[in-house]
Length: 78
Image (cartoon, rainbow, N blue to C red; front, side, top):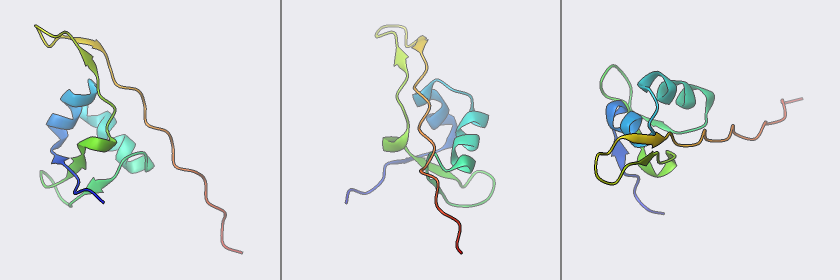
């Protein structure tokens, strides 16, 4: 298995074309994995993040990345 390429929240937000709060929400919902704890120490695997479409020359956002799917629901223990 490949080593994850970890980025901070600001870089993850730029990569996806979404605000940082959306990145945190996706991690909370289990859509993406969060690495580390505490303020400023959390990182995200860039390979799990949907890439935004940006203009080749200006890097202006054209289309934000798609929303990752929710994890499959697990059955409750009996």
